[in-house]
Image 1 (tube, one colour):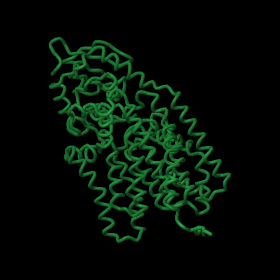
Image 2 (image 1 turned 180 degrees about the vertical axis):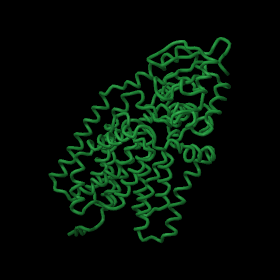
Image 3 (image 1 turned 120 degrees about the horizontal axis):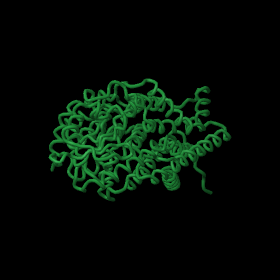
Image 4 (image 1 turned 60 degrees about the vertical axis):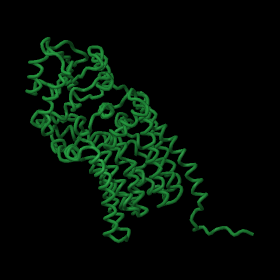
Length: 488
């Protein structure tokens, strides 16, 4: 008569295979459902527009950090470029699919981490909870295929590898998260904590971790332009990270986006608080991960909603740790409440109007109607998606007024103007407008502090070389004077 294996025996390989064979498709379906609103709009925010324009320029021979610039690392622009090369640049549908895959991968990694620590049920719980709360922000933040979303697989992979003492791989995952956006490097703190607590020989493990972090970043620098990579991703953005503008506005945005995410996590906060009071607060590395992610959200004092996405993976694991010992009624209530909140956020994403998208579409239609496909144009504003929607080439490598004025997201204080631009940008900008004189300039400032009237160089260029030819939805269109033909 066969003898049953002891209760403490590890699951057989077939059991592990069956577990993932059931869970992975379920998480993929849930990821697709939670990302469903993302397919309902041509684009969600200016970051998507910026990335789409960058990808088109790179596909036509542009060089990152030279003829195509941004303050971000190269991984997400390359992803957009690859998606456009495979499926065309007329739609962001391919990028939306990549976002679903990224969310699925993050959920699977979190599920595996939780399962390794607390068992099968915890694995399922972590994966599901993560996907449910990942949409708990303003839809333009939660549904966009943004830099922050593509950070998350790297950070989750870093913790997964650290749990298994694969320090080189953990470092590489942190490096890849950094290459999606600099704040992805926050995952290094919990990984380092796990290394120090692991009992592994410190020096060899630290060397492997450090090498893993450095190698992908160094490779990206070599593949682009090392000096440009360093300047645009690290040293050239000091003014962007300085607290300026109305403090009340910054604080309001911080608290408002935190409150929105708290609504999505409303079912999880009570069990986590009960666990903290009972001394079952979860492992220190998860709290370090959450704290480091909170510091990443606060970096630069901008508090955009999509920054808060970085909080969701550690929050899901902390909630899983709290729920695993909670009474069944508390577990059911927490998951049901979280699912209900998720449905509300999905409805918001499907039904909410997007007035700024409608504005960009009007400008793009007018721009396309007044220019030829080969013309270069300049849209002076904060909506680079206008170039992509109009299918026109920018006359400058600076796709928004932000890089040339330090304006960003309502930071309308005294530190907005030519003197606060990224160092060295205005001489390059003047040279570009001379070499590739725009066939049309659209002043889309609409009363914001980066208006040409407040910028001597741009005001002089418009006065000497251009004349007003029309207005569309508050934006002013300028065409070259008859004796000022557009450049080549």
